[in-house]
Length: 222
Image (cartoon, rainbow, N blue to C red; front, side, top):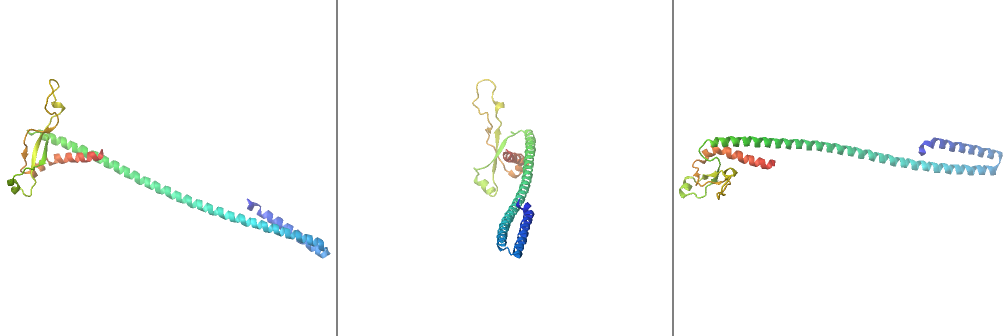
């Protein structure tokens, strides 16, 4: 770099200038005017060289200032990038926490489905002990008589319908094919009106509610 040779270069200029001044004084004292003028011109040349040299030094100083500014900008950019990396790491931690939370929720839902399935199986076996079909549906009753409307003006009427539990287990293994349906369908029965629906739902409501919850959370988990 230029700054490494600054001091020796300055010493050379000073030595040349001192020598030139000394020679100029000597020629003046001796009356050698022509030689003195030559030495004076040499001193002017040294002066110009020094001016050029110091100008170059100022340019280098300016360049050095620019480099310092660039270094400062690079340091600021590095700090900004480091801050951004820390923010991304924090966001990654938040994402990991969210993933763990979602996984826990999924496990909770699966546990809920398992418990509801167990409840349905238990309720099914309990229903099996009664001399009625295990499967049934409850539908709002549409054909309400005037008398029923008057007696239950503010109560919704329901009717219970049994389901025939047909399936592959009822299909004949051999012999001619049967024309009967072998899928679950409404039994050939007119059903029963629920005169006291509140009591009915208190007794069998958990069976229906458990099935609905299992379907709800099962679809969401799927």
